[in-house]
Length: 518
Image (tube, rainbow, N blue to C red; front, side, top):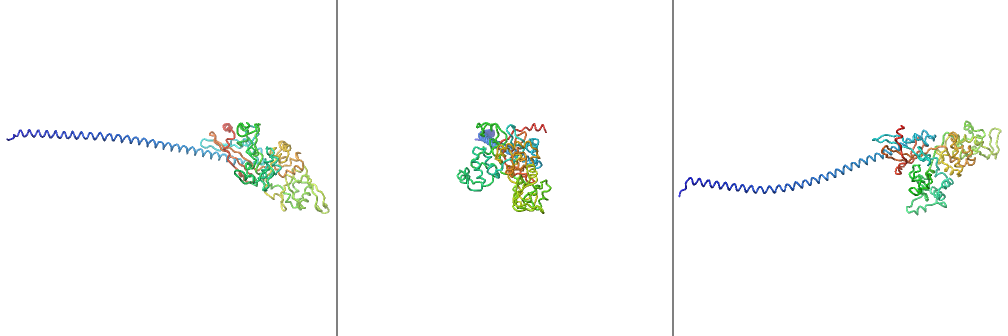
């Protein structure tokens, strides 16, 4: 049966339509499948994005913490650096105060009015300005309680008893102020004595070996006064008294009994302890402008002594005394001195003094100041000289013009005499006090008493203790240095120094008032 062309065209159209439908179905199916895949991918991307965000936040937080830590550390370092710089600046300021004081003393060592109490020179002295801070120093020293503030000056070490050379009697007299003074004296003497046998109340090496932490005795001179704390029986109260912060002022806590540290008597008195009465040593150069009696040539005595104002009798006495190979122990020995000739002595042709003749020195109260001003006696000086000579240093002398009554009483072994000396010197002129003769000429000591202690006395000072506080305004940072200056040589030198800042600011400062006065 034949198929007509029309029929064939119709079938072809149907088939094409079916093919198109099939293609459409396939496309729809394909599109449906693609839509399902997109939804899964978007979910995974969202979860991944959330995780990344959390990680970023954690990292940012950690970096913030690290940054904060670095910033804190940097600020801490800056603060520490600033504080360190301030400490160094405070110490440098205090050191400048010590050097300044050395210069003042070098030019005015013989004028106590300059260095004893002089706020103009020693209070709130401006040093420099650094970073908005104005730096000052003050030199201060103890004052009697009634003043309520320190004096601005230095401490004369020669006004204290030299513990290493004072001798047993003076040490025992001074320590009698303590409750167990006899025991303390024996223990101290044992400590500095090279002998092994302890005194009745003293302590030998066996005692120090029995301590929980044994140590060896010094058996020699003390190096610092604080070394007393190593000796049996000595306590901080003995050494420092009730001046716990070493400011030389009676603070409220130092006058309230046992209510607060330190323990005290609540008697309104400032007790500086043995630290205010004793020193480990003073020395002074031997005066080169004085004539050494023990270096005089017997045949030339008249020529060497004739121009200083001594009487002929005194010159002859010295000539004969030296001609018979006798030596003087001290210039004061000439006071009311007598001497018995060992042999006949020819004074001049036709003038011979017989053996056993008793000679008088011709030196009394009137001549004594001249003798003490012009003459000196160096033990073992020998022959062949005149001025100066012998040893170069005089050790352990006490300045009678500045020592307190308690120390003077220890040297004279008499409380009343010590007080009388301290009271009398206030009315004397500097010329009268230029040498120690005034102790006799003013009737305070008789000839024998004077000659007994004169070798241990002086009217000069060469060692000074300096208490210097360097401080800043307005911050209030400070440093306190304690030093000992020695001016016995051409250039001053520091023989002892320590930082006592930990004891606290010694007194309130009024820099604003000082600035107004500048």
